[in-house]
Image (tube, rainbow, N blue to C red; front, side, top):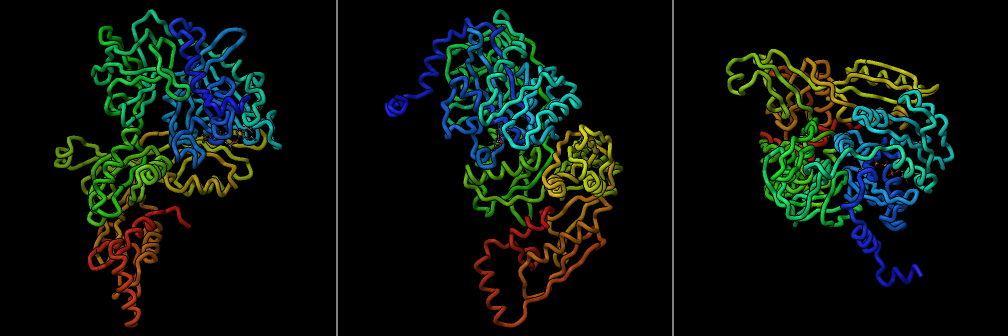
Length: 623
Ligand SMILES: Nc1nc2c(ncn2[C@@H]2O[C@H](COP(=O)(O)OP(=O)(O)OP(=O)(O)O)[C@@H](O)[C@H]2O)c(=O)[nH]1
């Protein structure tokens, strides 16, 4: 019968639409609404649990195809990670009563913790998932504190109990010790097999309080996410904190004070299901002719034009922590790349974009990202979704300089400047102090690796702040790191020296004075702007040497000797010389090859450098 139904066009979405329409949402009491999100360390099973919850409440059919329904982006499915939080409203029957459960899926990676905090602000409770085998990890701790500080109800869920090495007892002890949550409150599940997932739904209804919202109040909604759609403009995800809103209403965004007419609104199940109205306590989407995600800023408040209200406390805007230059492979692709970057940033307001240009790479941009993964994901999306080929320069962190020159202070209108491009690093003679961004890192590891990890941290100029055992074999350490020291390769090294067992997360910890210097790389005496880096004085020699060595390996032999130097000001700290190409046949071959590859070459002085050399030299994480 089922096969027949499917064959004759039976569609879950039709049934759901009929159901959504049948439920009179205006009469849906707020005390039967629950808003919650799922938070966890990466790979502990959020998306799998979300899929099960959607299936059990009939929002999606049980098929293989529906795996990770909430992970919509191609890069998410490929990498198996969640980047952008997605939302779904579920109808759940509990003890004869209909409940509306709004589930907000969140990403697990450290770069995207900003998305976690915005999801949290729309919820009253969280499911804190912990892998029954791996136990508490660094992001479990970070996510717990986000929820705890927001005073949400926390339901600990121990997942993957079907695994052979699952040890839920031990994980419960960790949860008691680290989070002070009684072990009896933990729910042991297998999201994969569906074991005890019904208990999770019951706990959502029984333990999480309904939102404090009344339909009698004036309309007031929090924008907690927004997307750009080419045809319809901005689609904002909102949590309604009071009153109601309907199609045709005139609404105002508190941040910009601009008015808009509501064109469409509805629930997310997880696809959009238009409804007539949205009411206090509900979570859904709204389209109101906004043309740019900046018009629907995350954390903004929406209200009715005729009933202004006080704005909800907003979010701290996401701060870019990693900057890199992006350039087209060829200047003729500049316009295409510009529009691809524009379109992609329409959907990701956390990326900052500034125009930039460089002698060697031409016109391009300097982009700011939340972290390295964020940057990699952005780059991958540019290539996959927009077919753009780009050159990305070395990532750098935002340094600061306290200026001592009155002339410069006047020029900048401030005594302190932020530098996101090493080429613009001001000279020591006009600066009284340089500052570098710091982060507080949390590392969780089996205790056998603590020695090696402590050495790694010391080599990264980190200062230990704390170290505790969370059970008889696992240690939690806190370190204060310069961001620059962890941005590129720290995580990979930590993983490899702990055979993959250690986990790491960090939060911003302000700025600290540091002895920084600008290092130039010279080719036959001419500085190569893209290779200019800011380094700690202690590190200058080793970094300069490594960069020169890599550059030497990347430049093809040319008909003359090339001097490759690393220099601080006028002082050369490292020097290499390439051989020149030998006999005449070699010369001919080389010229031919160079003619073919001409387009991919950059001329610096009289030296031809392959474009990709810039990138390989800058990639510090190799080897
Ligand atoms: N054995 C077993 N595997 C599971 C279970 N739940 C999830 N997994 C597997 O664990 C892996 C990670 O699951 P996801 O649901 O993608 O994890 P996630 O937390 O959403 O990951 P991010 O979104 O990247 O943070 C997948 O290979 C799942 O199949 C479970 O209950 N048992």
